[in-house]
Image (cartoon, rainbow, N blue to C red):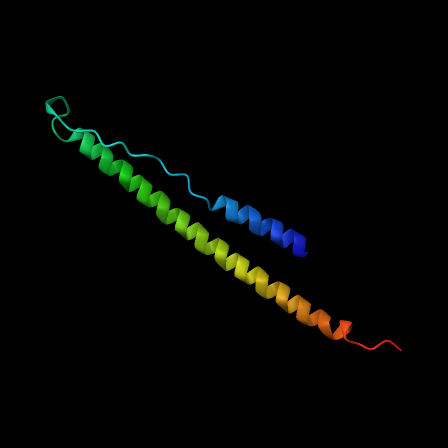
Length: 89
């Protein structure tokens, strides 16, 4: 049970790793009507920000799942302790 939980936690942590795009910044000139490159840059940065927000949300969920697993494991260990401390006859 513990190994399965740890494997699940590892998979969740790896899934939270972000994969961000690089937004190139090109100067605008007459051929781009002085706005197209900056508009593309702004849209790219907006997409990066959305990906970062989603990544942070996944990280928060992974942390919450890990804490829940830790609490569950601690509860299971506490439940087993009375059985381990019974003196042998």
